[in-house]
Image 1 (tube, rainbow, N blue to C red):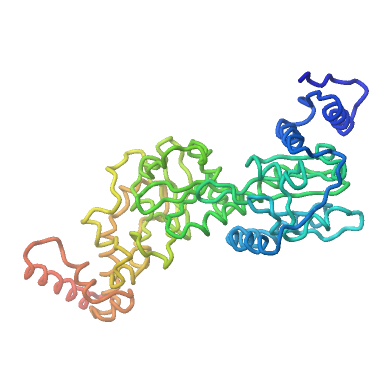
Image 2 (cartoon, rainbow, N blue to C red):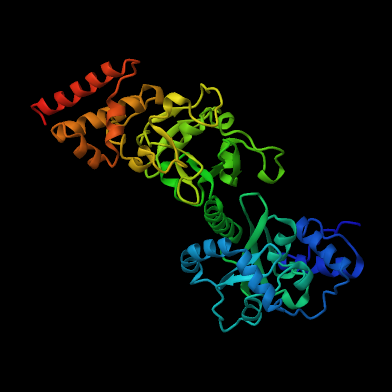
Length: 452
């Protein structure tokens, strides 16, 4: 088709879009250069469906059973929406906008419309279960995103049907841990144009909802948070990755994709190994703090702040649990990668326990054994920190001194068994009698210590 020629007599964008509409629908002239390619392609799809721009638009809800099914199927998405809703409502309260959440097919499962006096379409279009797909209501932002999976703005006359031309919409996709489109977040304003960058706002909140969804769906993943700034680890801009029990990257969000130079998740052929990506084993990644932040140096040279969270149906089942031993401010150098292992080596089992073993003393002790015996905060590599075995032993000896050599009281304070205390104090030697003598000597020394 012949591109639409520029006109000197249509100064405003709304006027140029209106001219493009008339020439496209009446004469078949391409609107390229006036409307985005996403809008143009949507117009073309609507025409192939034999829709007429002059037809009346009916915002019709789907059946009650389909609405219920959409809510049930997307309960994690809806919960993530509800958690972000207070902040979103506060942001939009003094504007003319409402927010809408649809599932991947365009069925509305959440909205914030308050029914302002000038609104005619919004109270009807934001009812639960309304079908906002391209096939139902033509070119709209949520309909185009549901069809293409890409963020888009559809402003005024860019809507396909004449009856919807007063609307201004911006929408962004939400994806799950498999990279599939599961929802669309939209903000819309009727009759009044956006007075702000709607695309940036919707991308921010779609990212926040998407991040919550990714974490809630990660019932068997080690979740890693990454950012160049420590203060950003709890914001929508954080990079998120999920690592499965085989040590492979199961999913990642767009921020992690950019930070680590990864391919688009929806287009990658095979999941990369976490060790190849970070230069750290699963055990080391799992040892990153959960409540604080640690610095790690990536193989690409970046030094970023990070935290980890081990997620499983019962908290640990099926995973290897590593005591949190990296203090705030410590730099974990990931450049010298170590051989790939899916589980820690046998000599690390004193501080790493399989969570399937419900009798494991380490599991009962959780993260308390090692946390308070680390070097002062500062820049150092993980290799310069005391070993987990040494830190474990030091804490036990200190507690043993405080308890005047009472092993039972020491075990009670640490939340472990007496046998674990003896095993931690036992040096690596084949002679069991010699080991027992050394352990007893350590207990006697603790009892006679003047600093107890």
